[in-house]
Length: 469
Ligand code: AMP
Ligand code: ZN
Image (cartoon, rainbow, N blue to C red; front, side, top):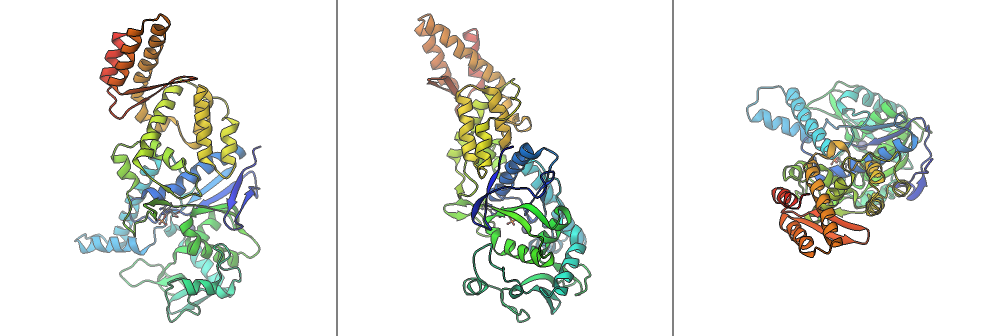
């Protein structure tokens, strides 16, 4: 079996993955807060984990992986949107408006991530379904001396956990010096963070030993991962922006509530999708959504290809040039695998690249080599490890099936003409390709073609007819 190695941000080393139970490899990805459409940056962890899950299912068996990704549906931004709708005249209750908002956002999220070919996780818990578990965990943390109640809040006592700060590599004192922390008079230490907070009557709330209130964000993931994956599991991930404070706080909560269990063995963090050197984010306003790109006619498979062309631990930009290149490559590959069955297993070169810290860029380079060799079955089986050339995403390139048959026939006719020294005909085919927007490159391994932006299917069909192709 292939040995998978991953960079563990907790130890800052590339490590062998050694599953706790190879019969059930377990991983958790922090999911979206469902108040609005996902921006392109939000898709990055989803795609990275999608490739990781495909690789794990290949290595350990399709039924031996459990993948959990949550929906955070308790959040002040969701509440604000519901309150805005009520102020705008809706007569639904606040709860109903919140349900409406989260349900529609989850629907968008599913549609957008499906369009990128990201398989749904095995479990997609909603925070609101695990309030009882969060309350129990908070009570346990209080009982164990790691949390305290103050003015309707429950706070985690960071000084009670000497390891606090280890993941992000900073001490509590450094954090206080460097961070803009909310200084509330009821906190024992400025870095203490909220496990539970009180809700006023116009906000959603649940009854608890500390009065009516709602959970803090970090406790959600600790409670849901424990409920669905147990207190010790293999991989926990998210964007690097979650390392501090979110993941630091998750570790503090889970390790203090379940001492000696270990929580997650490997922490996997993706770098940021950037816009002009800055993290794409809602709050900076420098974002576009996955849906914006899909609506512009950029196929989900093309978006996926671009996102996987950069290693997950490197920052990356989205550019139109990258999308155009990806589209040309994918069109060529779709042409190469049309009507072909995949090989029984993916190419070792592709698996080796992915097993080496999910080197998706290296895996794509290996796919190019398979394509250059004309190995359609190998290309098809291997591309699917990256969620590319999947039948469900191929729709946009399908219109090309007729075109690719015509192009291949015309290339054969051109070869015949050259062999017969009928250069006038060979040149006519070449000029016809150019006029129809088909780019042909002659390479040592044979001609490679792609469709240019102004591709004209009708002209190509005429050309094929004119040459009996
Ligand atoms: P949020 O809804 O902001 O918690 O983000 C959901 C997921 O998207 C988290 O895993 C974040 O780390 C990730 N994320 C947010 N912005 C970016 C970005 N610009 N690039 C990559 N990942 C991001
Ligand atoms: Zn989380």
